[in-house]
Length: 378
Image 1 (cartoon, rainbow, N blue to C red):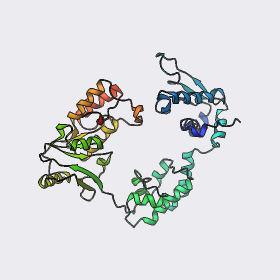
Image 2 (cartoon, rainbow, N blue to C red):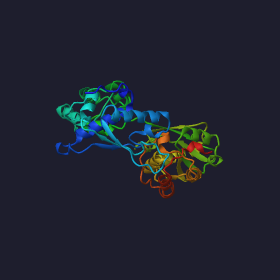
Image 3 (cartoon, rainbow, N blue to C red):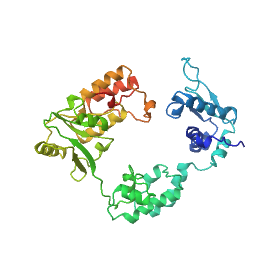
């Protein structure tokens, strides 16, 4: 058995590639074990190859060495119509006979249960320790700092000690998961299934708002720099808009329109009459007298924020003065490819519920295959 390359553990993308083959083999039934295991290299699975430069060329040399020096893969390169395309574009890697044993030796992964199968076995063995159901806990292999499955399950079990204390999700996470206060983010539904009687105190959503002297509308802005510039009057068209800083996905929180679920913070002095009107609308006590818009990055994540906000604020739609400028830049090929800004994992939201976004903006993004950040304008 060959000795693993000295650089293997220091090259995350190749380490991922090696584990990918073993994971694929572990998932196969015995009847399918004779079929070759093949992967096509692309921007999603090995993004480092597609950022042109010396680092990409070096990574490709390391991958080729697994064929030439270690006999792990067979590489089949696709005939390139574009003579300037790198030779690894759409290259196919097939695991050679004997390659599985080499990889298992290098990775210290014996034949047997896959990581997910081992996790599900551990959950089943500890099912009696939870008062609720464990289906969601079994659904995905949960990892934390390379800890053993049993250690992670014990951490979930320890939540029982805090069922009646009314802690926030971040407090529970910090106490039970080795000081990691964010581990339970996006896992509230899971732990409520495990502990039906668990009382969690919700954290109020913090929302920053700027109210001008005269109001023409309400504008939610995704990014901080654009929000602060708008408060200072740039672009001038924002001058008479109530500005709401809508960073990330906090606008999708189900409690954002409940008085005990949100904390509204106002910049500078605000007109008390307008502030009361705003809060009456915000807490669904009256219909807004003003148009309600969202302006953010022209990418799938920004469109997803619009979609989430529209689920909470039905009258929300994309702010055309901002997006029309960005649309022109996109059509002039002045945007950026997703991989250039580490956005290749963004998912197309499909539809947002806003006609302008669904009929104009999203089709343009799909056609051009580029994104535009809102900070580029105004």
